[in-house]
Length: 241
Image (cartoon, rainbow, N blue to C red; front, side):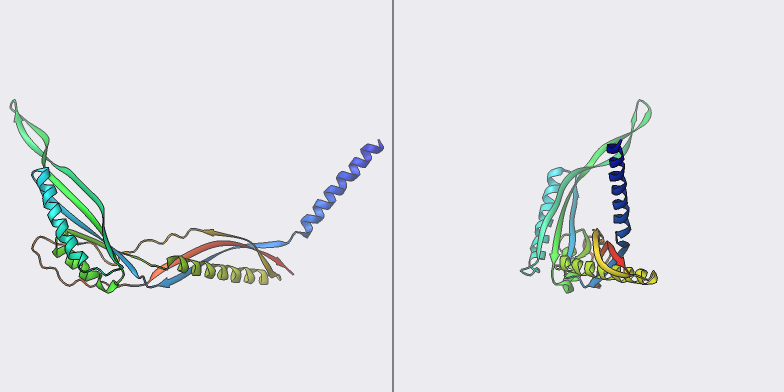
């Protein structure tokens, strides 16, 4: 009986100690913060498409090869040492069309191969953004049937992302301090911090360009604005009197 009573005392002591530990546990505030940094991009990408069609597959391939070679020669001659052009996709495929034929006095629709289409896509990386329009125009004059982009990027995007994260933490702390002050408390220290991915959408400066064969290309103006680099995070701060 004495042993049972001692066990009860030990159990009661443990409960009391746990209650005291909970009472002494510091109060916390959980807040979210967002940071945004603006910077003018210093990299631009253009996608150039050379598309040709012919009745026979070998003819479609050969015509596309000549047009692609002319495009590469023209664009490479305009690129600087830190700029480049590379193939990203090439395909040759049949083009189908529906035809109506008479069979046994009835009209029947059939699908037949009308020819073959060859498509060769190139990506151009530019560092001199003042020449985006010139490169696009030269590509259209030299064999490209379509130009897409530009898509902007920044060589220091990791550093800019870090700056946005630091700003997000600063704003989170300011919010925590305002909330703590309204409750008669003060922010003591940062207890936990977690970041969330803030994807930056790829921005195009203009719509897709295209040109009919033999059409004179106008001078294409491209306005380069600022890109947003964003960061989001959740912070837990310890607060006290």
